[in-house]
Image (cartoon, rainbow, N blue to C red; front, side):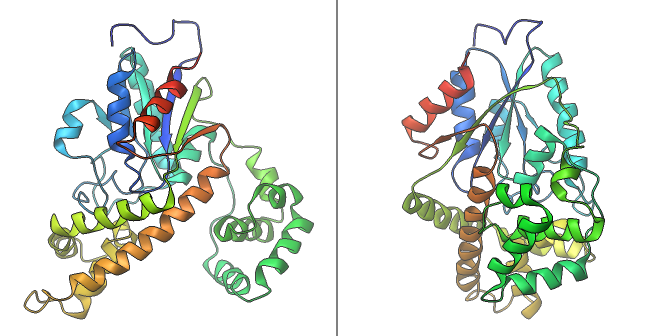
Amino acid sequence: MGSTPPAPGSAPLVLALVGPTAAGKSDLALEVADALPFPVEIVSCDAFQVYRELDIGSGKPSPDMQARRPHHLLDVLEPDDPCTAGRYAELAASAVRDVWRRGAVPLVVGGSGLYFRALRDGIFEGPEPDPRLRARLDAIYRRPSGPRWMGRLLARIDPAAHRRVHPNDRVRRVRALEVALAAGEPISRLQATRRPPLPEARWRVAGLDPPRGLLESRIVRRVRGMFAAGLVEEVRGLRDRYPGEWPGRLAIGYREVLAMLAEDPEPGDLAERPGAVEERVVIATRRYAKRQLTWFCAERGVTWLRGAAGDPTAEDGARRVFRAD
């Protein structure tokens, strides 16, 4: 860590480490940061780690991990204070510039694809989400012929989006059609008007892509660890303190435990239930990891590393990406 970041006059650098949940991005980020020849501070890119009190279920870095390097955008909002992608991008861009002012390099770490895109590329001013239209499009997509029909429709009204969005990416196909039908204008044209929050930045992005078997085992180990660490108690406390709507209610792990508590709000006979809930969380996490990989595979400029935290090959690969001239 004896040398300095790129000299003044060159474009300021932003590093990023992205990939699926349970791949060990936070652990690998610390290992790589220690090995880089310039000071590094970590900026979280996670939709739920931004909230106070959502610690276990969000996989927030431990206090010991946070003590090793400065971390930003952890515990900055109350649990009932909604955070949109646009708001995150503003907070993260401010954090990145603060890191630059201190003469360090920011390392953006996380798996929230929409938040990452909002920070790097900006967001466009599209129409407000229409729940009824989205529900209708979702219902059509789930029919046996739905994906093919929607693909033809998208190709007709927004050829650029049709070429860019993977045929199996239901969320982005539905959103593209929703925007086009609601705004009367293709989403690809609207997206061309967005402005990046950090237009001066030079990005180097590494993505973790663990072998499927390894990722599966890491997901199971992570979920079991969350329950052993007290996830049920964390969720029960949040439910009692925030009886209304709060964003974390929708997060994997939190929503399954809340459903369990709703079935029997008293702790008396819950001892046998967490095992079944753990399995539901494992399944949901596995599906989410697959969606994350689909999302980030569509992002430009990602150098993929075959491995996970603890794999020397992944660590060496990340160092090469981040130190590239």
